[in-house]
Image 1 (cartoon, rainbow, N blue to C red):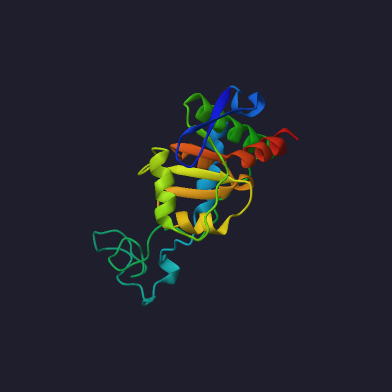
Image 2: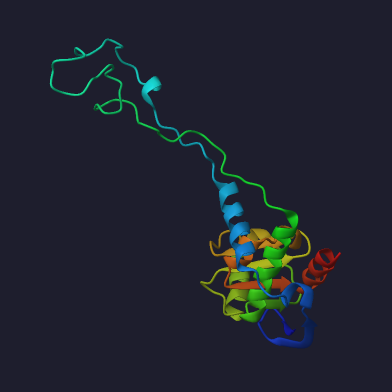
Length: 209
C-alpha cells in the first residue's frame, strides 16, 4: 500500500511511501488488540481504593444484646456491616490490576491495530517540520490544513522535539510521541496517526528486525 507524503499545508508533495506489508498489511487479530488495550488500561489504574471493614471501625466490642430470646437475629458487635455505621462487608482493598502479556502478543496487537488503521485510511505520512519557538497557534494551523481540527490525532516523530511537543501540549485531542512510544492503545484511540517521514522508516526498521 502506498501513501502520499503531505506537507504542513496538507498538500501532496509528489512523493509516495510504501507501507510495509509485514506491519500494515497483516490479517488483524482482534483478540490480541483487546488484550493489549486491556493491559494498557489496567496498568494505568492506581488501585488505591480502600473501604473500612469491620476491623477498621472504632466502636465497643460489647455484645449488644443477649444471644437468644429477642426474636431477632444474633448480633455480637456494633461494628458489623449489617448495622448503620458498621464496616463494609467485602469492601475494596488496595491492589494491582496489572497483568503479564507476552511480547509476541503485544507486537501482533500493535501490527493488527496499524493494519486496521491503514485499511481505514487513518495513516498520514508528513514531511518533517519544526518550529522556531513553541506556539500552539502554528500547530493548530497544521491540524486545520490536515482536516484534523477537533479530532483525535497522534503525531509520531523520530526523536523528541521540544518545540513541537510544547506547541501541542495544550491541545487535549492531540498526542505527540516518538516512534518507540507508539502502542496499540494510541493507534486505536486516534482518528488519524500522522507519521513524520523519517519516523515511519525508523519505526518499520525496528519492527522488522
